[in-house]
Image (cartoon, rainbow, N blue to C red; front, side):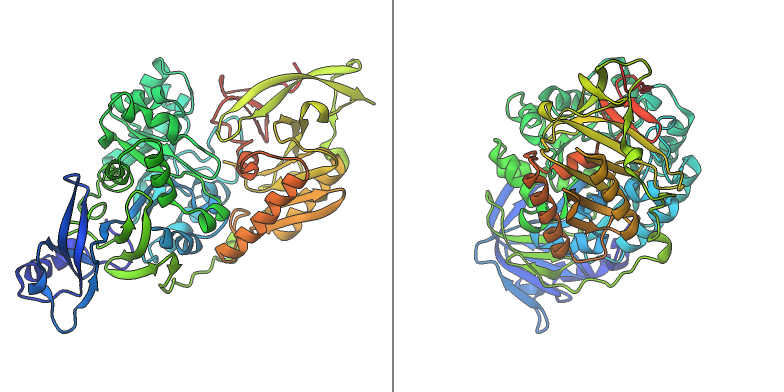
Length: 600
């Protein structure tokens, strides 16, 4: 398996041997490095590293025998040479940009391998969307492997998206060059209950000797957890507690610890290593979801590694968790994850290991970035028209579409279920509240931080709107935000304090073909257009980040103080993570995987 512009090992092995022996000359030699050896856990001084045909050929004390007149020689001057960083689980669409733009943003931060699950675009465009992402991935100057989405839709019976994928689709996808495994299996009750679709998809993946990604989003570690593990999932990034990480590793899974734009799950779970003393070989770092602003300003996997070090890990351990551990998990340790002969020459020159100060980034032996700046030319790529026109509302929405009718016979107040946002975590709370009733309409309660939420169906132009209530955004005054990024079925989520602004925001996204928009007092305050499947922009990452900054600013001006509230907004329809969500079918109790009435 390989992706992009690198020849298979077997095609170039004789050249690697000849360079190592001095019979041929290297394309590139890095001299005088401190070699960060993630296999032995050592930092070896005064090391020379020779590269030919995009792969490491020699790592040792003296590579002078590999240097010829055409060999590029780079003096490390005692700086560290370490493997390029790997993101073990992530969604490109969360960056609001295409694969190409995502790579453009993260390469200067040292990321040279990504394992992407395109289940966002799959829920809109089906297998055709996966093919589009796959074909873009293989063009990149770094390694982008694709996990075949497993749950489209993510919660059958509780939601209906734009597509349905099954075992036959998974089996067909496993023959594609950059497909590395099965994306996160979110239907954990289905696995524990031997649902034929889940059983068939996992079997097709295991038959192809690919890796099965996990997603067990329940805090309960009883029999359903054991049934899920027995069903074949090999990793999980949904843990939030030390005991979650320990439980997964003890069952033979890899615990993926994530630090995204809004998910801060490393600090607590890394204690399984620093305090419990568990073997770090079975822990992996990832981001899951990072929006463009985080990528442009704060970094990517370098940010995660730094954070892990700050929480008590040794630098070598944190680096192993973002390199060789990931490579071994995906059966790619012969290709990536270390600076050793035969592997792809994806490496970083680093002047400060603990702070991960990256001076240069190389991919397949080619310098791609230096001092935080991209130097490589990125491949041109355009999405077809079929991926653009995907927001179909069916009608122009009005304020009446967002009014919540109280039950017949209700008095001055009514008891309603409320989705409670939990800052910096994906789970929500299942709350209840007594809400006022006016003229037969259940009203939000701004004083109690309860506003409206609506899900607008946007795949089949049905005009259907599901209404509910949400708490935690802190909005004041008249405002609303709408987004066609609504994991995982990606209808449109609208959250607001007034029906008027909610209608304005929803209709605006219908006009521009998707994205996210914020209205206050009847005026548009921020807009990020995402016309590709309603999920991704066709603009540069820096431009998208600027627009996202305006969005965050508008939310703050309206009273929202949540860290990365856009990410929290986008997950309110994710009907596979407890406790309470909204879907096109109604309010979902994810603890019982059932639809429940809005009013108690």
